[in-house]
Image (cartoon, rainbow, N blue to C red; front, side):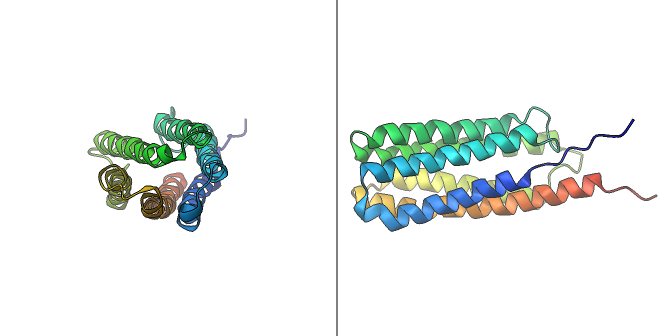
Length: 194
């Protein structure tokens, strides 16, 4: 009987990182002329990021079999994407707060996942130091975004412009984390000698 191998669709996670970078660039480019349509596009991009995360989590067989963290990230993106679309149909000024709460939830999920991964790998080789540093960077970037947006609101345009930098940072950290996870998965699949 042939052995069935599962290929992990790392491209979905890279796509999510790219969508985050595009969200940041979009916010930077259109923060001065933000319209309800801009909010709907922004919300749609967050929903696409969530769908990419769901697709990755559904196919990922390299880590924990439930992939609960991936589904939680996907739900966070889709939920706040819908909230931003709804917000943009009325008073667009609440979009800044929605982005801040999205980042806060992202930071919370990232920190809990990092703790869970570290505890699960104690005594083992499951989590690299680089992976933990990337998780910490994600927490700081997302936490920084929510802190800046909730604490230093300098008007809608200025707050939106500042918030554009954070999704770019998250996207870059997702690229790095995906690269590390993909390398670890390839090492685990490689035949051991000796």
